[in-house]
Image (cartoon, rainbow, N blue to C red; front, side, top):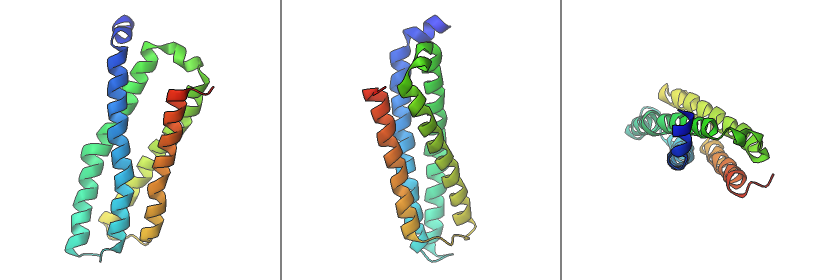
Length: 148
């Protein structure tokens, strides 16, 4: 099986990148939806629409994309275990885990909005909207440039 994984390594890498793009698209959009939702009156049609959008974005796009990102990333390491000795991967993995933690935090915030219990401002969510972008930039630089 290891030989087959090595043979299909370019496909694993392509599927990993596609998954990351989908995950990041959702991670960049969801806190923006939260910002708009925070400005909507609780119980309004607008608020209810945001609830549907947030739930579908998380359940249909972000969750599966994160799972496939991890799956293809792990398969890439299994196919090429020498990667575990490379410093850039040691820098990348904690940042990816931080991004996954943010994913969990966003899922928790979605539930707070679902219950109409949000107390945070739109500005709060707009600031958090930038964090996944910063992490993405650093992760991509580590993976592509491999500075160490």
